[in-house]
Image 1 (cartoon, rainbow, N blue to C red):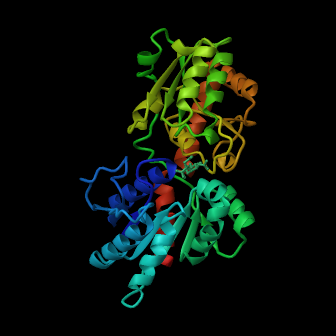
Image 2 (cartoon, rainbow, N blue to C red; image 1 turned 30 degrees about the vertical axis):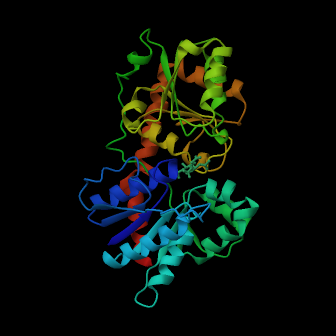
Image 3 (cartoon, helix red, strand yellow; image 1 turned 90 degrees about the vertical axis):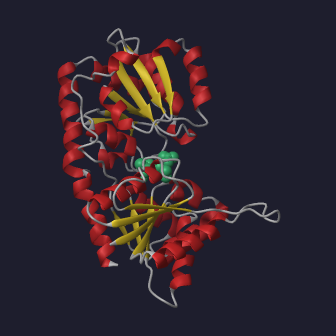
Length: 371
Ligand code: GMT
């Protein structure tokens, strides 16, 4: 098939899922056209059957806010016509599905151009519930030819917020289990922990919803019982406050802030546990990527995370903000090598048997075909 994909190219899990989906589809022989305002971070444009079409938003003194949605709609229609796209698949409702709807209307006199919207979480739980975007988000879902949600929990929340006006299919997030794989030696750990401390890793966009500061509290508490070093991957508004908290708690030598990283598959295998203390998480892609690398997550029991992590089997789930409980789980995991080995193997098993790209991508293909 010829598939057009639109996402936020620079930021967040939705863009990563969209990019990995495009790469997997291209690997399976589809022609994939990314229509975005810059090259998505994990996309190598030299990959066979991957095409990249930049959306240029020209400015004009009259425009206080450049009309990105209109430029995107125009580009979508143009690419769809030139490359005979079978469908558009947009990730994150606002504004991508409205742009896709316009492109569909623009082409309607000539041909049919269906579009699918994949909801990722904050497009519903934060942006969509904002009064100024509520109506347009609801409309964009109703107008989509197909809607997918990345977890059962997100589907339920969407129905609660916007009503059950549209059939929605759950297609969970996925991971490439050949690229994300364990390193039983944790070979890279010595770079950050030359004294043999265990590595805790956090990976996010450092937004308030991620409760990044809890990671520092958990490290400080866990270190009272077990030698550990925390590696913080990503950047965002709460990085400065997290650095300050590490100094305040006297653990700054035991935390490394790496900033944004493109190749997290090279970092995750060195970790002994992933910290995911989020307030809300519709799925928790970072936890899945870690689990595929045999790294169990100490996460919060929120949103779609329990669909991924089974408490006490392949990771732990505690209440958001309960840093004492999260730290105890970290200590349990890091101070008992038999338990760690068992949970590490179980985490990898969950990733490979339930969320591997080979299992999930055919669900998207089947959905495309049905449209
Ligand atoms: O987590 C974020 O703030 C970014 C956001 C996004 O849309 O880019 O992530 C959401 O989508 C990810 C990929 O599907 C999910 O793994 C995250 O759980 C979800 N984030 C939230 O629901 C807060």
